[in-house]
Image (cartoon, rainbow, N blue to C red):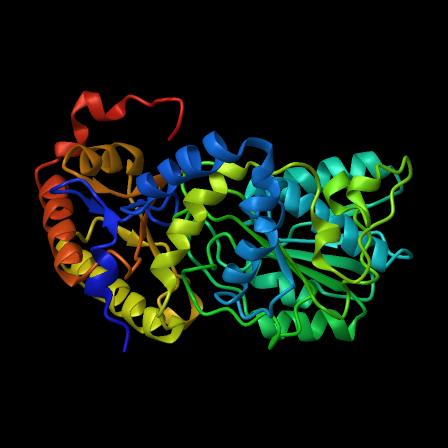
Length: 398
């Protein structure tokens, strides 16, 4: 049984703060400063350019990818780290379209994170070949999978409500209709058990700054099913994905049979040091235990909020099997209410138009934190503290 009291001690959270926002940005691991100092002083400062070989920088994309693979049900050599999630979405969808060249429909849903849809819109403009993006409601996606669809692109866990798609069922239907599936695991990796290979997934992408706690701007990852790795076409054809990058050929040849073909250019090696340290917290964590603990915290939170703050309406699925590791509530002025919570050191976040999101990450959140957070929320609601004008002011980031 995973001892989450020990993992809680591995994170640096300010005294008195209850951090229910790991679904947006994970807290800093206590090991992060030492990891960065080690990179600066024992690697960059002393090795300089030799570090690409002596410190393994060139293959960190893969060694970190293998560490993440363990958390998403993937085998070694199927996942690589680097770039941003937006770029990885572009990579995966473009590669998926190339596998089904006679079709022109990309299927997503209208609850998908906007940047995923934006990247597809840009890809369609670039290809300029009659592609169509369809975005039904999340509940209607399954029935919208037809023989017209080339790629199904979905975020497994909805960023606003926490609603969870049935990965295995969607993949089975998509494959039956000859379509390829791309999963965005931004709100899944490190939050819920994921079994990419068991579900026969084609592609998956995700970020590492949320539940994986890699820090702001931490690199993204991409997974390619081993059965596809030798045929997948990398449209963003950078030199780190070349079959012989240091031959400096003028023509591009992708690395044969290896996930390296999904690498692009020189990665941000400094960020790898922080991510490596963050992944240490996952050593010995059982994802089944994590899920049980997460659901228990969510259920307690929902029960307490609904009993003590009836003005709030649950926006997440009632059934815990149908949601990820977050709970969302709607309120008449969710933005101001969230600012009042943050002012009292209960950190969640707001998503337009009226949603307050709370992430439940057992690595550093326990039942006492949940009950204390509801105490503060109840006081804010019952006293109308959220109506204070200072809580109406919106910054550049909301």
